[in-house]
Image 1: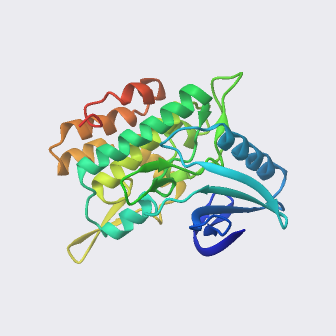
Image 2: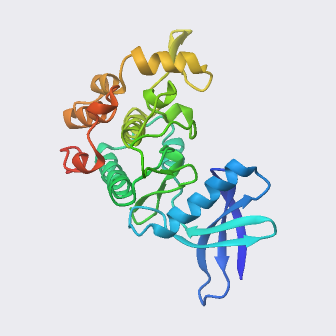
Image 3: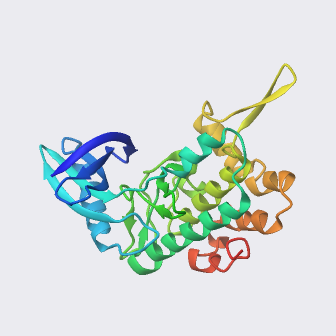
Length: 276
C-alpha cells in the first residue's frame, strides 16, 4: 500500500523517502523513514525511544508520525510530508543571500513553540536542532522533525550522552559536561544566527587575492571549540550587518555561554523578535 517515489534525504540513522499511500483515493503523500535493525543495541534503543516519543506527540509545530511498522528487517516510520524541504535546503537555495528577518521571526516562533512543548509537556530534549531538522511547507508551516536522538528527562535534571551534530552543540555539550533543556535553546539561537548571516557563524576567515573566504567545514574540533568558547559571538557578528536590535538580543540570549543564563523556550516566546 505504501509506494516509494524518491529519496529526500537522511534522518538520524536512516534514509528518508517521499512515498504515496495507494490505498487512499488521492494517493496521500507521506515521508517514510527507513531504519535498518542491524545497527547495534544502542541504536535500537534510540529507535524505540523515537517511536515512543513520536506516538506521544500532538503538536502542530512538530512533524506528525502516522505509524511505525516493521518490514524486511527495517523499522518504517511513516511521517507527515513537508513539501518545501528543510531550512538547510532554503539556505542552499539562497546561495549566500540572507533570509529575510520577518521570515526568520516566524521560524523562530514556530521552533520555540515546538521546543516549549517538548520541554514542558513531555520533558524531552531534542538534542539535534539544526537547519536540516527544521522542515517547511509551501503554505508557510514550519515544523521541527527528527527526534532520533532525543532524550526524556525523568528522574534527573541533566544528561551527559554525546549524541547529535557537534557543530550545533552548546558549549557544555561540546566539553562533555552534563546538560539539560538549555542546550536546545543554544541550538535555536545558532540556527537563527546562521540564517541571519547566510552562513554558519563559526568560521575561520582567510584572505585569497583580496577576497575574504570563510572556512567552516574544515574546522577541527578544537578550533571550533575555541571559537565557541572564546571567539566573537554570533550576536556580535549579526550586529555588524543588521540594525535589528531585537534579532541581535534574541540570538544573544539564546547563545549565552552559561546555560543557567539562557531563558526557557516558553519565556523566549514573548521576546520582541518573534512577536513581530
